[in-house]
Amino acid sequence: MAEQTQGAVPLSAVIADAATGVALALRGEGDPYALSGILRQSDALTPAAIRVLGADALAPYAMDQLGAPIGADDEAVVRQALAAYPPGADASEVSVWSYRGLVEASHAFLPGGAQHWPSPPEAAAGWVDHDPWPKLSHRVSQVAALALPGLAPGLTEQLATRTDDLARGFVRAVRRRDWLQAAGLGRWLARLPEAPQSLGLDSGLAFVRQMGGGDPRVALHVAAAQRFYGRGW
Image 1 (tube, rainbow, N blue to C red):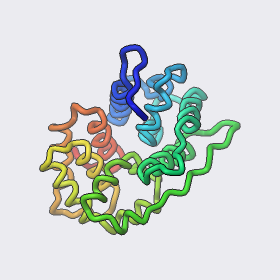
Image 2: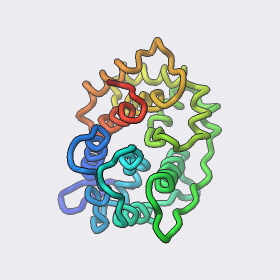
Image 3: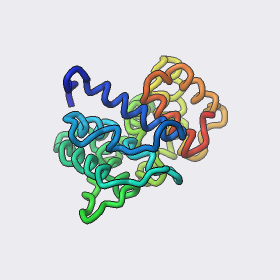
């Protein structure tokens, strides 16, 4: 999805605004969350923004207490995104997993109404076992939205066998000041069991938030680690 403009607003700005809304909701701040209030069905960039955010567009609906009912408009914008940007035959593993995560989140967190949600597409996971740790860390950070409770259980089980490698990736990302990658990896490590104690994940995530929290997607990842797994405070 190339950068587009709607008037003077680029897609990156629409994604940033939506990520900010998600992060605020996860922190219990701001107005009650409604996806269709942040990304409206009538806006041309909404499907692309939801596709980029993936399951994170629905992250506030995974909270025990949302504070606002889920409406038909929320379902409509998700269906619009799923229909507009399905992964093609030559799609990358990250693209397929991101789409699968959005489908899984729709099944888990949205009621579905009279229409059934599509089935999650098959997504290859051999790379989890075979990628060297730098490449693994890069890919895992790109699918950080799948670290929501209950999503991608098979992938989570596989990643649990490589927590040491993901911890190495987290440290490297922090040293390189790649805050988005560090936040995504830290979020996964918050979900996975037995992250190395020597990593200091809580202080590490707090540092990432302090240094990179101006990026809305960094703030979103750290807020999710805090909200759902109690890490990074």
